[in-house]
Image (tube, rainbow, N blue to C red; front, top):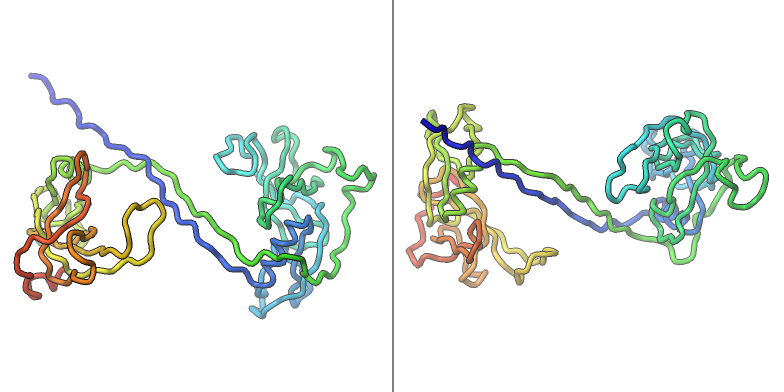
Length: 328
């Protein structure tokens, strides 16, 4: 007797990305504009400490603080960790050290990269200075990295690594930076478990497969392998749909980057026939302002698609509210 081959393990690279625009207050605006101009600014707290990077509220008293000071581009390493395998978009492409540097004139540490030939060249207490980026735009990346002070002074002076006390600064620059775009991104490989593998394989055959809880008998779509209410394994597979009922919905008026769908369009929660909870999908084939709760819909598949492209009206009468009210 020949044993059946093990099922294929599904894997897929996924990217979660959400760049967003952040407006800056006067303190952060001055700090980033200063970096563009090759100046490092901190802020003085009510207790007299200088914080770099600056904050807008005193961490002890919570009062607003605005007193800006200029600190030196040199400082001392207070702690560090070696990064032997840099990842994409990190400050340096070659191995480097992450360091906390207390700049001369500051009382707090600034986290950045230190360009060093190896971990043996890094130590707590070593003197370093800022290496400015060749092109600067008003971002923390305007500091390309730190470098040891013996890496060759950029001004040729014998005291290029000597510190200097903080001095007042009015924070005024021409063409100040007033906002930044922060790119939040997560790259990872997703591997579904037994239940979701069956669900995904079912979609490839244009079927929607859920799992029924043996205790409460609710059918979960997509399945998770266990009932979140009863805490027991769900192993009884049930095909649901394909038709379903719109339980609630929203009208999308802002076009998402990389999504080739004209706005406005409707995204809805759809309770497939036989399912114990609703899943979400886009509604098409009907004007967006005619979508309604109780609308009966069916999936529309594209050639080669592994999941429904959207749902369209079936032409059936709307479902009675009592039939889906527990699934909203």
